[in-house]
Amino acid sequence: MEGSNYTLFDLSYLDLAIGLALILIVAGLSRWQQLKLEGELVIAAARTCLQLLAVGYILKYIFTLNHPFLIILVIVVMIVVASRTVKGRQKKQTRELSYLVGFAMTVGSGISLFIATQIMLQIKPWYEPHYLIPLAGMVIGNSMNGATLAVERIDSEIEARKMEIEAYLALGATAKQAAGKCIRAAMKAAMIPTINSMMVVGIVSLPGMMTGQILSGTSPIIAFKYQIIIMYMIAFSVAVILHR
Amino acid sequence: MNNPKIELLNVQKTRNGTVILKEINLKFISGKRHILLGPSGAGKTTLLRLLNRMDDPSSGEIFYDENNIKNIPILELRRKVGMVFQIPVTFEGTVKDNLMVPYRLGVISGNADENELEKALELSGLQTEYLGRKASELSVGEKQRLNVARALLNKPEVLLLDEPTSALDSESANKLLHSVKELNEVLGLTVIMVTHQLENARLFGGKIIHIANGTVVREGEEEGFFLNSLSSNMS
Ligand SMILES: Nc1ncnc2c1ncn2[C@@H]1O[C@H](COP(=O)(O)OP(=O)(O)OP(=O)(O)O)[C@@H](O)[C@H]1O
Ligand SMILES: [Mg+2]
Image (cartoon, rainbow over all chains, first blue to last red; front, side, top):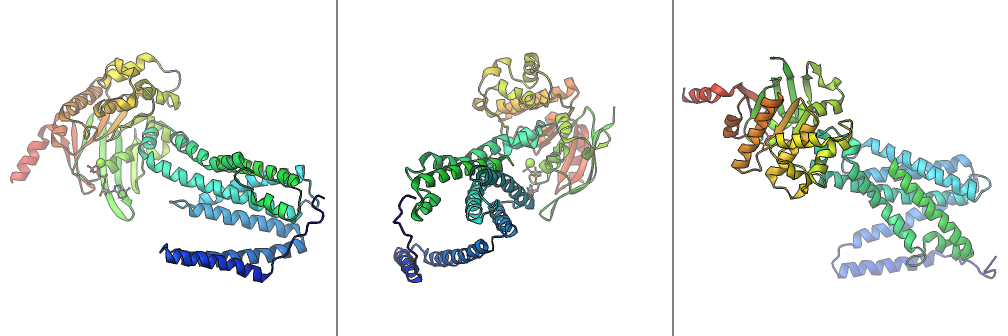
C-alpha cells in the first residue's frame, strides 16, 4: 500500500474540546454582530457532538455484532427518517408522500447499492457493514436532498401555475398532463445539485468520503474510484426517486 | 325539450368548517341560457365549479343527463361540460397552438382540422387571421374569445362561463355576450353564465337564478324577472 509509513492519529476528547472552543468564538462573534444566531449555534454544536458520538458507538457495536438483520434495520431506519424529513418540507403534508418517497428511496438506493456492493465491489459477506452502511448513508442522504428540492419546487410551481393547471383540467386533461410542466421543472431542479457536483468534483470540492479515505491512508487512486461509483449511484438514485 | 341537462339535489359545500353553499336545488334545462346572478362572495364560482367537477360538493347529488356525475368518467364529463374562467388563460405559442391543445391532450381524437379551428374562432368572434398571432400578445378581450374558441373545439354540450366579461370594457363585453348568445342559438349549446351585473343578465337573457349568501333566493325567466323584483321592492 502506498504511504506505508503513514499512521492515523487518534483524537483525544481534549482535542474535541479545542474544536468546541472554535464554536464558542463564532458564537461570540455572532453576539458581537447581533446576528442572534448564538443560541442555535450552541444547540447545533451540541447536537452534532452528541449525535455523532452516539452514532459512532452504535456503529462500533453493529460492526462487532456483524448481523445482517441489524444492518438492514439500520438502512431501513435511514430511509424512514429521510422520507419523514422530505414530508416535513411539503406544505400540504400527506401521509402518501412519505410512503411514496420511502418506496422510491428503497428502490433507487436498493438498486444502486446492490450494483455497487454485489456486482462492482463484490463484498464478502454480502452485508459487510463497513461498506454497506456508509454507502447507504451517502446515497440515501443525497436522495433525500433531491426529493426535498423536488417537493418544494412542485409546491411552488403548482401555486404559480394554478390557473394554467385548472385551464388544462377544464379542457379534459389528466392530472399528469395538467401538471406536466411543474413535474418537469421540479425534476430538473432536483437533479441540478447532483449534476453540478459531478461537474466540479475534485476541482472545487474534495468530497467527504474521498477525504476520509485519504486521511485513513487509502491511495488517492482507490479513493477516486470509490468516489466515482458513489457519484453515479447518487445520480441514479436521485433520478429514480424523481420518477417515483 | 324540457329535460334537465344538469340537476342539483340538495347540494351543500363547506370549506374549513364554513358553509359556502347550502340546500341548492336547481335544474339547468337542455339548450337553454342560464344566468347565475348575485353579489360578490355569494357562492357563484363555487357552484359553477361543481358542475364540471373542478370541485365536489360536501353533500347532495348532481346529475348530468340523469346520471350521477360521480359515475361519469371525469375526463368525459369535462369534455362535455366546457368552462371559461373569469381571467382568460393562454398557453405558450400562437393562437393556433392554443386551439390545438385539446388535440394534443388527446381529448379529441384524430388530427386537427384547419376548418374546425377556423370555425371555432369565427363562432367566438375572432377572424381567422388571428391563427398565427402570439396568444400572449392578444388583448384581454381577444384572449377571452380565444378561451371560448378553445372550449368549443371539444364540442361541448354545456358551456360554463365565470364572469367572462369582468376584465373587459363594456363594448367588448357586449360583443362577447352576443357571441355566446349566438352559440346557444346556433349550436343549441346549454349555457350557464355567472355574472354580478344586472345589465349583463338583461342583455344575455334566459333563465336567471339569483344567488345570495350561498343559496338560491329566486329564479325565473329574464322577461318579468326584473319587473317582479321591482314590484316586490315597491310593495
Ligand atoms: N378555497 C376557499 N376556501 C375558503 N373559502 C372560500 C374558498 N373559495 C371561496 N371561499 C369563500 O366562499 C364564498 C363564496 O365564494 P365564491 O368565489 O363562490 O363567490 P362568488 O359569488 O363567485 O363571488 P365573486 O362575484 O366575487 O366572484 C366567499 O365568501 C369566499 O370567501
Ligand atoms: Mg366568482
